Length: 295
Image (cartoon, rainbow, N blue to C red; front, side):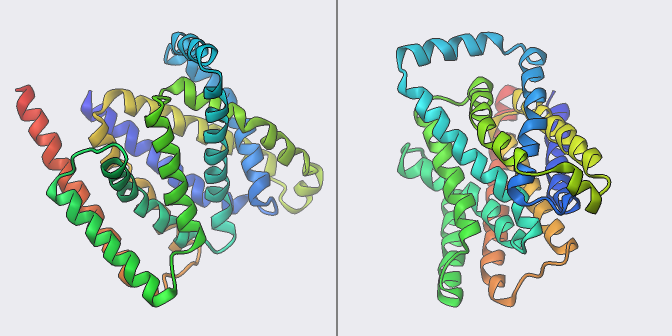
Protein backbone atom coordinates (compact mmCIF):
# COMPACT_ATOMS: atom_id res chain seq x y z
CA UNK A 1 0.00 0.00 0.00
CA UNK A 2 2.80 2.44 0.93
CA UNK A 3 4.71 1.73 -2.31
CA UNK A 4 1.53 2.32 -4.31
CA UNK A 5 0.88 5.55 -2.40
CA UNK A 6 4.43 6.79 -3.06
CA UNK A 7 3.90 6.07 -6.76
CA UNK A 8 0.65 8.05 -6.87
CA UNK A 9 2.21 10.98 -4.97
CA UNK A 10 5.27 11.22 -7.22
CA UNK A 11 3.07 10.84 -10.30
CA UNK A 12 0.90 13.75 -9.11
CA UNK A 13 4.00 15.90 -8.47
CA UNK A 14 5.30 15.10 -11.96
CA UNK A 15 1.97 16.13 -13.48
CA UNK A 16 1.91 19.40 -11.50
CA UNK A 17 5.47 20.09 -12.64
CA UNK A 18 4.39 19.36 -16.21
CA UNK A 19 1.49 21.83 -15.85
CA UNK A 20 3.97 24.49 -14.70
CA UNK A 21 5.78 24.12 -18.02
CA UNK A 22 2.63 23.43 -20.05
CA UNK A 23 1.16 26.84 -19.21
CA UNK A 24 3.89 28.39 -21.39
CA UNK A 25 2.31 26.68 -24.42
CA UNK A 26 -1.04 28.40 -23.86
CA UNK A 27 -0.03 31.85 -25.12
CA UNK A 28 -1.54 34.30 -25.97
CA UNK A 29 -3.86 33.43 -23.05
CA UNK A 30 -3.03 35.40 -19.90
CA UNK A 31 -2.70 33.94 -16.42
CA UNK A 32 -6.34 34.69 -15.53
CA UNK A 33 -7.56 33.21 -18.82
CA UNK A 34 -5.64 29.98 -18.19
CA UNK A 35 -6.92 29.92 -14.60
CA UNK A 36 -10.50 30.26 -15.81
CA UNK A 37 -10.25 27.46 -18.34
CA UNK A 38 -8.34 25.23 -15.92
CA UNK A 39 -11.13 25.44 -13.34
CA UNK A 40 -13.80 24.85 -15.97
CA UNK A 41 -12.07 21.74 -17.30
CA UNK A 42 -11.05 20.41 -13.86
CA UNK A 43 -14.39 20.63 -12.03
CA UNK A 44 -15.89 17.68 -13.99
CA UNK A 45 -13.02 15.49 -12.75
CA UNK A 46 -13.67 16.61 -9.17
CA UNK A 47 -17.32 15.71 -9.48
CA UNK A 48 -16.36 12.33 -10.95
CA UNK A 49 -13.96 11.78 -8.02
CA UNK A 50 -16.90 12.12 -5.60
CA UNK A 51 -18.25 8.85 -6.94
CA UNK A 52 -14.84 7.29 -7.61
CA UNK A 53 -13.77 7.75 -3.96
CA UNK A 54 -17.29 7.23 -2.55
CA UNK A 55 -17.40 10.69 -0.97
CA UNK A 56 -21.17 11.25 -1.11
CA UNK A 57 -21.53 10.64 2.64
CA UNK A 58 -18.83 13.27 3.33
CA UNK A 59 -20.93 15.83 1.45
CA UNK A 60 -23.98 14.96 3.54
CA UNK A 61 -21.96 15.49 6.73
CA UNK A 62 -20.59 18.79 5.40
CA UNK A 63 -24.11 19.96 4.52
CA UNK A 64 -25.26 19.16 8.06
CA UNK A 65 -22.31 21.08 9.55
CA UNK A 66 -23.09 24.12 7.40
CA UNK A 67 -26.75 24.01 8.43
CA UNK A 68 -25.71 23.99 12.09
CA UNK A 69 -23.02 26.66 11.60
CA UNK A 70 -23.94 28.74 8.50
CA UNK A 71 -20.84 30.97 8.65
CA UNK A 72 -18.76 27.90 7.75
CA UNK A 73 -19.94 28.49 4.18
CA UNK A 74 -18.38 31.98 4.22
CA UNK A 75 -15.12 30.48 5.54
CA UNK A 76 -15.12 27.86 2.77
CA UNK A 77 -15.68 30.60 0.17
CA UNK A 78 -12.81 32.61 1.69
CA UNK A 79 -10.53 29.57 1.53
CA UNK A 80 -11.68 29.04 -2.04
CA UNK A 81 -10.57 32.57 -2.89
CA UNK A 82 -7.11 31.89 -1.41
CA UNK A 83 -6.82 28.66 -3.37
CA UNK A 84 -7.97 30.44 -6.53
CA UNK A 85 -5.29 33.11 -6.05
CA UNK A 86 -2.61 30.43 -5.61
CA UNK A 87 -3.78 28.54 -8.70
CA UNK A 88 -3.75 31.76 -10.72
CA UNK A 89 -0.20 32.57 -9.57
CA UNK A 90 0.93 29.03 -10.41
CA UNK A 91 -0.24 29.51 -14.00
CA UNK A 92 0.73 33.19 -14.32
CA UNK A 93 4.32 32.93 -13.05
CA UNK A 94 5.92 30.87 -15.88
CA UNK A 95 4.78 33.37 -18.53
CA UNK A 96 5.77 36.48 -16.59
CA UNK A 97 9.33 35.89 -15.39
CA UNK A 98 8.31 34.91 -11.85
CA UNK A 99 8.86 31.16 -11.91
CA UNK A 100 11.90 31.18 -9.61
CA UNK A 101 10.28 33.51 -7.05
CA UNK A 102 7.15 31.35 -6.98
CA UNK A 103 9.21 28.16 -6.64
CA UNK A 104 11.07 29.66 -3.66
CA UNK A 105 7.70 30.36 -2.05
CA UNK A 106 6.75 26.69 -2.41
CA UNK A 107 10.07 25.65 -0.87
CA UNK A 108 9.50 28.00 2.06
CA UNK A 109 5.86 26.99 2.62
CA UNK A 110 6.41 23.71 4.56
CA UNK A 111 8.64 25.53 7.03
CA UNK A 112 5.96 28.19 7.52
CA UNK A 113 3.47 25.40 8.22
CA UNK A 114 5.77 23.81 10.80
CA UNK A 115 6.20 27.19 12.51
CA UNK A 116 2.43 27.82 12.39
CA UNK A 117 1.81 24.44 14.00
CA UNK A 118 4.15 25.35 16.85
CA UNK A 119 2.87 28.90 17.45
CA UNK A 120 -0.87 28.44 16.81
CA UNK A 121 -1.62 24.79 17.56
CA UNK A 122 1.11 24.36 20.22
CA UNK A 123 2.44 21.29 18.44
CA UNK A 124 5.68 19.79 19.62
CA UNK A 125 8.47 20.02 17.08
CA UNK A 126 11.60 17.93 16.97
CA UNK A 127 15.11 19.29 17.28
CA UNK A 128 15.71 18.79 13.54
CA UNK A 129 12.57 20.74 12.65
CA UNK A 130 13.62 23.55 14.99
CA UNK A 131 17.06 23.70 13.33
CA UNK A 132 15.34 23.68 9.93
CA UNK A 133 13.22 26.69 10.91
CA UNK A 134 16.29 28.57 12.16
CA UNK A 135 18.15 27.74 8.94
CA UNK A 136 15.28 29.05 6.81
CA UNK A 137 15.01 32.15 9.00
CA UNK A 138 18.73 32.78 8.47
CA UNK A 139 18.18 32.59 4.71
CA UNK A 140 15.22 34.97 4.86
CA UNK A 141 17.23 37.36 7.02
CA UNK A 142 20.12 37.39 4.55
CA UNK A 143 17.65 37.88 1.69
CA UNK A 144 16.18 40.92 3.46
CA UNK A 145 19.66 42.40 3.96
CA UNK A 146 20.73 41.72 0.35
CA UNK A 147 17.49 42.36 -1.57
CA UNK A 148 15.32 44.25 0.91
CA UNK A 149 12.86 41.39 1.44
CA UNK A 150 11.15 38.41 -0.17
CA UNK A 151 9.39 38.82 -3.51
CA UNK A 152 5.63 39.30 -3.43
CA UNK A 153 5.22 35.97 -5.26
CA UNK A 154 7.08 34.09 -2.52
CA UNK A 155 5.06 35.86 0.18
CA UNK A 156 1.75 35.09 -1.52
CA UNK A 157 2.62 31.39 -1.74
CA UNK A 158 4.03 30.77 1.73
CA UNK A 159 1.75 33.27 3.50
CA UNK A 160 -1.42 32.46 1.58
CA UNK A 161 -1.14 28.70 1.85
CA UNK A 162 -0.20 28.93 5.54
CA UNK A 163 -3.38 30.92 6.24
CA UNK A 164 -5.38 28.47 4.12
CA UNK A 165 -4.18 25.38 5.99
CA UNK A 166 -4.44 27.06 9.42
CA UNK A 167 -8.11 27.89 8.83
CA UNK A 168 -8.86 24.40 7.51
CA UNK A 169 -7.22 22.71 10.48
CA UNK A 170 -8.64 25.10 13.08
CA UNK A 171 -12.22 24.49 11.90
CA UNK A 172 -11.65 20.86 10.83
CA UNK A 173 -12.63 21.60 7.24
CA UNK A 174 -9.99 19.34 5.73
CA UNK A 175 -11.80 16.60 3.81
CA UNK A 176 -12.33 16.15 0.07
CA UNK A 177 -15.89 17.49 0.30
CA UNK A 178 -14.60 20.84 1.61
CA UNK A 179 -11.93 20.98 -1.08
CA UNK A 180 -14.51 20.35 -3.81
CA UNK A 181 -16.80 23.05 -2.42
CA UNK A 182 -13.85 25.47 -2.33
CA UNK A 183 -13.20 24.73 -6.00
CA UNK A 184 -16.86 25.28 -6.84
CA UNK A 185 -16.66 28.68 -5.11
CA UNK A 186 -14.04 29.72 -7.68
CA UNK A 187 -16.27 28.66 -10.57
CA UNK A 188 -18.09 32.03 -11.07
CA UNK A 189 -14.77 33.88 -11.32
CA UNK A 190 -13.40 31.20 -13.64
CA UNK A 191 -16.43 31.50 -15.92
CA UNK A 192 -16.03 35.29 -15.98
CA UNK A 193 -12.34 35.05 -16.94
CA UNK A 194 -13.00 32.40 -19.58
CA UNK A 195 -15.80 34.46 -21.16
CA UNK A 196 -13.45 37.42 -21.66
CA UNK A 197 -11.56 35.56 -24.38
CA UNK A 198 -12.71 34.88 -27.93
CA UNK A 199 -11.12 31.50 -28.57
CA UNK A 200 -11.62 31.83 -32.31
CA UNK A 201 -9.26 34.82 -32.26
CA UNK A 202 -6.83 33.02 -29.96
CA UNK A 203 -6.79 30.08 -32.40
CA UNK A 204 -5.41 32.34 -35.11
CA UNK A 205 -2.27 32.84 -33.00
CA UNK A 206 -2.26 29.39 -31.40
CA UNK A 207 -4.06 26.87 -33.67
CA UNK A 208 -3.75 24.06 -31.08
CA UNK A 209 -5.27 26.01 -28.18
CA UNK A 210 -8.45 23.90 -27.90
CA UNK A 211 -6.44 20.69 -27.73
CA UNK A 212 -4.10 22.26 -25.19
CA UNK A 213 -7.03 23.32 -22.98
CA UNK A 214 -8.44 19.80 -23.07
CA UNK A 215 -5.02 18.47 -22.06
CA UNK A 216 -4.89 21.11 -19.28
CA UNK A 217 -8.17 19.87 -17.82
CA UNK A 218 -7.30 16.21 -18.26
CA UNK A 219 -3.86 16.49 -16.64
CA UNK A 220 -5.20 18.70 -13.82
CA UNK A 221 -7.93 16.16 -13.08
CA UNK A 222 -5.62 13.15 -13.17
CA UNK A 223 -3.06 14.96 -10.98
CA UNK A 224 -5.74 15.81 -8.42
CA UNK A 225 -7.17 12.27 -8.36
CA UNK A 226 -3.64 10.82 -8.03
CA UNK A 227 -2.89 13.11 -5.09
CA UNK A 228 -6.18 12.24 -3.36
CA UNK A 229 -5.40 8.54 -3.87
CA UNK A 230 -1.93 9.02 -2.37
CA UNK A 231 -3.37 10.88 0.62
CA UNK A 232 -5.62 7.89 1.33
CA UNK A 233 -2.71 5.43 1.19
CA UNK A 234 0.14 7.26 2.94
CA UNK A 235 0.86 8.58 6.46
CA UNK A 236 0.60 12.37 6.51
CA UNK A 237 4.31 12.82 7.33
CA UNK A 238 5.42 10.76 4.35
CA UNK A 239 2.90 12.52 2.12
CA UNK A 240 4.33 15.89 3.21
CA UNK A 241 7.90 14.82 2.49
CA UNK A 242 7.01 13.58 -0.99
CA UNK A 243 5.34 16.94 -1.61
CA UNK A 244 8.81 18.48 -1.87
CA UNK A 245 9.13 16.88 -5.30
CA UNK A 246 6.76 19.50 -6.74
CA UNK A 247 8.66 22.73 -5.87
CA UNK A 248 11.94 21.10 -6.94
CA UNK A 249 10.39 20.26 -10.31
CA UNK A 250 9.00 23.81 -10.50
CA UNK A 251 12.49 25.21 -9.97
CA UNK A 252 13.88 22.94 -12.68
CA UNK A 253 11.11 24.05 -15.06
CA UNK A 254 11.95 27.68 -14.25
CA UNK A 255 15.52 27.12 -15.44
CA UNK A 256 14.38 25.18 -18.52
CA UNK A 257 12.13 28.02 -19.71
CA UNK A 258 15.02 30.47 -19.48
CA UNK A 259 14.82 32.08 -16.05
CA UNK A 260 17.99 32.52 -14.03
CA UNK A 261 18.70 32.42 -10.33
CA UNK A 262 20.47 35.64 -9.44
CA UNK A 263 23.57 35.51 -7.29
CA UNK A 264 21.74 37.54 -4.65
CA UNK A 265 19.25 34.65 -4.27
CA UNK A 266 21.91 32.01 -3.58
CA UNK A 267 22.00 32.50 0.24
CA UNK A 268 18.20 32.10 0.54
CA UNK A 269 18.08 29.14 -1.84
CA UNK A 270 20.98 27.40 -0.07
CA UNK A 271 19.34 27.83 3.33
CA UNK A 272 15.98 26.60 2.03
CA UNK A 273 17.53 23.49 0.53
CA UNK A 274 19.42 22.81 3.76
CA UNK A 275 16.19 23.26 5.75
CA UNK A 276 14.35 20.99 3.30
CA UNK A 277 16.94 18.25 3.75
CA UNK A 278 16.61 18.54 7.53
CA UNK A 279 12.83 18.18 7.29
CA UNK A 280 13.18 15.18 4.99
CA UNK A 281 15.63 13.55 7.41
CA UNK A 282 13.30 14.26 10.32
CA UNK A 283 10.34 12.78 8.45
CA UNK A 284 12.34 9.72 7.39
CA UNK A 285 13.36 9.06 11.00
CA UNK A 286 9.75 9.49 12.14
CA UNK A 287 8.34 7.14 9.48
CA UNK A 288 11.03 4.53 10.24
CA UNK A 289 10.14 4.74 13.92
CA UNK A 290 6.44 4.25 13.12
CA UNK A 291 7.18 1.23 10.91
CA UNK A 292 9.26 -0.32 13.72
CA UNK A 293 6.32 0.14 16.11
CA UNK A 294 4.02 -1.64 13.66
CA UNK A 295 6.36 -4.64 13.67
